[in-house]
Length: 244
Image (cartoon, rainbow, N blue to C red; front, side, top):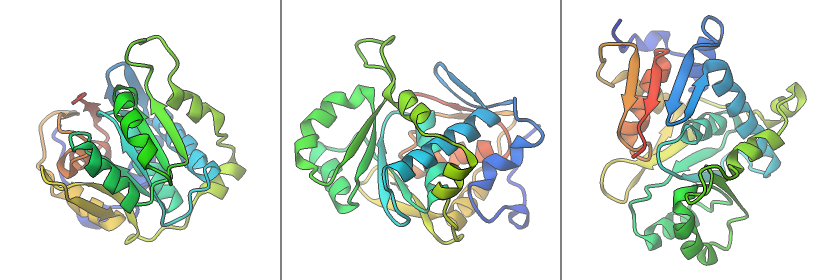
């Protein structure tokens, strides 16, 4: 069946509802795939809760920003939904930019927490001395030279409890016009900010496709890449993230 665009009148007000709406009727169905990662709706929801609790543990406050520097990975989506829960903003960085531009963005947004794909370990090593406000770095994926090595991101998720008390403490009371995401609008250096409302409008404008699988080949640091992924999630599709 086609992945239609649906009616805006039926849309939930908050972007976090896109995952919750599928938990009741298909918790064990595949939600997101990326390489060896295959997550059901229940697993995706649990990981989002872990990230939200981790943000709280890192003393992230509503209105603050954290960043992700990674190839397409479930962590990019988990960061977005966790930001929506906690009132923070996830900045998905364009890793194609020169080092000094990435440093400039991180400084301007006063990023204290950064998730970095292991493929970008050398880039991080180059720019880390220039990032005085950066308190915490979490590496995503095993080391590029040791595919069987430790994935620090998975350990970070496990460390943060998702018991009801911790989860409720991490949650924020968001408004539909709260900023939740920053990505790139295209091939320039400009970031575009999305609120809950703007994300819903952007997702509704994605062209429907036939079938029950949504393949996302664009980088998630681009608006079109993230909106395509959210379009698949909105319609309960098996959303496949292609490593870029």
